[in-house]
Structure formats: structure tokens, C-alpha cells
Amino acid sequence: MRWVPAGDRAAVAVWEGGADEAPDPASCAARIAAAKLPWVVDIVPAYDTVTVVYDPAAAAEQAPMEGGGPAVWQRVEAALRRAAASGDAGAEARPRVVEIPVRYGGEYGPDLEACAARAGMDPREFIEAHASAQYTVAMIGFLPGFPYLSGLPERLAQPRLAAPRRRVPAGSVGIAGVQTGVYPFDSPGGWQIIGRTDRRLFDPHAAEPSLLRAGDIVRFVPVGNDDGARSSAVPGGAAGVAGLDAADGEGGGRANATGEGVVRGKAPRTGLIVRSPGLLTTVQDGGRPGYRAIGVSAGGAMDEVALRIANLLVGNPERAAALEMTLAGAELEATDDLLIAVAGAGMEPTVDGKRLPACRPVWVRRGTVIRFGRAARGCRAYLAVAGGIDVPPMLGGRGTDIRAGFGGADGRPLRAGDALPAGDPSAWAAAWAAALAAEAAASGRRWAAPGWCASPDGFVPEGGARNAADGVVLRAVPSADIDAFTEEARERFFREPYRAAPDSDRMGVRLAGLPLELNVRTEMCSRGVLPGTVQVPAGGQPIVLGADCQTTGGYPVIAHVAAVDLPLLAQIRPGDRVRFRPIGLDEAHRLLLRREKELRLLAAGLRCRLPARSI
Image (cartoon, rainbow, N blue to C red; front, side):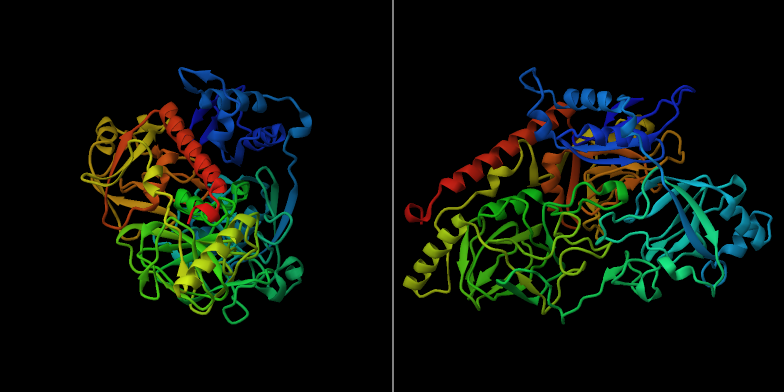
């Protein structure tokens, strides 16, 4: 087994395939978890790999200095190698045996008869063969709780559908190639559906959200359509997660909103009411790390730096929940006196017809309406409120996961009438709010801001380009698998420009340009992916994964955008010109650590900036 970098924030364990080294990703992942390395963020076991997501800044604190810079990769690789080789028997993965009742065929398995015919069996024989096999959870990905199961008898293998269904019901048991699996939510999908279960595969409210984990043993148990198979079903009989809308088939289940559009929170202090949500406005924070192994995207703000700056300007923890607005902003009414800050794309917010200054704390009186326009530059703007947007936390985060239907405002984009609670402001924020409120009263205005600001230009990475003459330039670390692409494709990727496609979103920025070719097109096993990974599907057009990307992917990877340039990725608009420039791993780490140092200096400077002598 060897470790290879996957960009500047992940390492992948790859088994070489020797007879004396059979892959055992689940046990390897368990040993690494048991080592409790402080800089490990996520561990994702897959078919024949383990992907470890790490925090370079945390790792650098323990790294030796070599060549004038922190040897982050050397530190990470050595520590992971030691942890993976640990002989601690207590750290081995302990598989559980989970039985899943399945109604095969009919309305529950519309593809069963066609699958049986392709296998040269009658449907009853096919059911018996599928249910008599013992399966192992190779990995969980695509959707939260979605198990990819190995162990399907070879004679039952099936092709994917020529055209994916727009809606596959939650609980559907499917086959694709030599693997079988179960859809945890309503979702589009291209697998052959042979049955359905009522077992709940994923519940974000549970102490252990996923029914299954990598390494578990799964057995399917055929049941009749009229027997008691609902003993472990979701209340009310709907397959999936309690509270999810099983009628919504676009991108996963979505939680039902209750309280007439009011987002429920424990905070007594009101904050904002949405009068108009704009094009796409969601609650986002610093993400929910630690759950990629069960298919939950880390999510969080696309432009992490803009989020952190906005939060620092109102005295919040840097990764507190705020509003993320895309391309066209929202119209919001303050339901209490608030200290707010805006950062990111230029959406020209106004209060009482006056331009609201960005990148500084702004006090607004209760009843004030804040209007954001269309982004004149960039794509995403962030509005932070002192105390944070205090929606209930879910799996360690408050951000919205639209595909999975949880977090934020009941797992969906904001809409008119939503009420957003604000948490309690810090003492620093309270002092600034009091000083600015007095200034506003003295001038007869409904809002006030200091004369200073935190310049966002100070956080454009060294050598980074935002809307330069040749477009947005993204530095990218070549993939360990880049040699799978032709020499012409490798040169083309770093030479030719691309255009951001209109269907880009938080899951990824889709690019249009000259296609990239592989030396030999082969089927790849899925492995862990993360924001910044540049995948190349069969058509040859790259996709740069974003904050809401799936946790695993099976497309070839040509490069990984350097973490320091992910804020540039977040601000790419449809139609923008995009170029890539190669960067070494050590240089990518150096730039990221420099940015983190600058943000620490900003935080320290703001803590020392008191209103009595700064307005």
C-alpha cells in the first residue's frame, strides 16, 4: 500500500495489487481513525482506496521546516503510513450483519422481469439468487447513506439504464454492473430497480445517522406485499427519512417546511424576515466535516474566505452560519436591531436607497429593509449577522444540504416569509452595535457604519487572478492519475481556456472547451473526492467539484484546484473564461498557510479595534 496526494488537502491509500496485499479499506480507515490524528478531517473508505481529508494548517503546526517552508505532505504521509500499519486489533473494523426486507418485482421492482430475462432466468429464480448472496458494504456515497454493495453474483450483473429515471423512489433496491445498492432518498438514478425496502437507511436526527457503514455485511430478505415488512419502516409507511417529502424527486428528498415558512430555532432573539429570496439564497456555514464516510457532503460556504471575513466583522466565530446569495440577492427585513456585514460578490446592497458599505460592520435599526441587487462582479455574496443565523444544528453544522434535504431552512433554499433567528452577539459586537446605534441616532439615519473596512483584496492569493484579461486563473495540482490522459490532453488542460457552463452550481462548475482524452478508456472504481477535484466524464469536458459535491466519484481526475484558489472558483459566473495553471504541492501548501496567517492577523486586529477610538 502507498499513499499519494489528491491535491493539497487529501491523501489516498492505494493498494498495489500484490497477492500478499489484499485491499482492506474498512480496517485501514478504522486504524487511522483510532490514531486520532488532530489534523484529520474526514476518512472515506471505498472499494480499493481510503481517502483521508486533512487540514494543512493544523498539520503544519507539527511539521518540520524544510527548504524554508513547512513540509506538510511529508508529515501527513509519514503519520498516515504509521497509523495504517498499526497492529492494534481493537482498531480493526468490526462488520455488523444487517438484514433488509425487500418487496421484489411489481410496482416496487419495475425492472425485475427485464433483468431476469437478460440473466436467462425467470423472476423467481432471479429473486432467489439475489437474496441468497451475502453482500459487503464497499463504500457509502452518491447520497447520504447510499450503500454500494459488492458480492453480487456475476450472472446477475446488469447494465445501467440508457436514460436515467428522473425519480427513483426512496428504498429502491437496484443493480448497476456488478454492484447492488439501495436508494435512501427519492432521487434521479440510472440503476435497474428490482425491489424496494421500507427500512430507513439514513436519519440525520439519529445518533448514528446511517444504517450501514463500510465493511458491514448485508442480507436481503424477500417479503410479500401484504406482510409485516414495515416493522422497521419510516412512520406513516413512507420509505426514506422521517419528515422528508417523498414526492420530491429532483435531487433527493426535501424536508417538509412547517410553521408557515418560519424556520424554527431556539433563540429568543429574532433576526431577519425574507421578503424576497433572490435567485438562490441559503443558510451556509463552515461545513459539517466528519461525515463523508456515510455519504454526507461537507458542504458549507462556496467562498469560505468571504464567509469568514463577514463573520469576523460582526464578532462571530469565523465559520458561523450566514446567508449565501447567488447571482441575484435577497430582500430582507431586520426584525430587531442588528449588526451585520457583507462580503463576497458585489451585489450593491442598499438601505433606504443608500449604498450599504461592504467589508465592515453595519448597524441597522429594527424594521430596516436591506435590498441586494444582481452581482455586478463575482457570483456569491455573504451576509453575516452578529450572533450567527441560529437555525438548529444538524450533524454538527447549520448549513443547508439541498440534495439531502436537511440543515438551514428545513433543508431548502430560502423563500419569501421565512423568519431567521439570530444568536446572541459577542461582547465585541455588542459594543460596536451600541456605538453605531448612537451615531445613527445622532445623524437621524436608520443605519451606521465605521469609516474603516477589511479590504477583500488583501485575501486574493498571491499570483491568483480574478477577472484578469485572460479570465479567472485557477492554480491546480496535477493528479496522481494524470498520466492516464494523453499527452495532448495534459498540455491542453493547462494551455487552453474554458467557459463556465450555465448549469454550474454548488455541486460543481461545469466547463466547456476542447475535450480531454484518455490513453485507454477503462471503468474506474469510485474513490473519495472533495471540492476542487477536476473530474473528466466520458464526454471529455471537465467538471470542477464544488462545496456540495458528492463524497465519492468514479470519473478520471486530471487535477485538483489548490485550496487557496477555491474562493476564486466560488465566484466564477456562467460564461466566465477559466484557465488552469499547474502548481506544485509544496507551493500550494505555502500559499494556503500564508492566507491562514493573514486571516489570523485580521482576526487579531479586529479584536483590538474598539469603537470608542475607531469610528
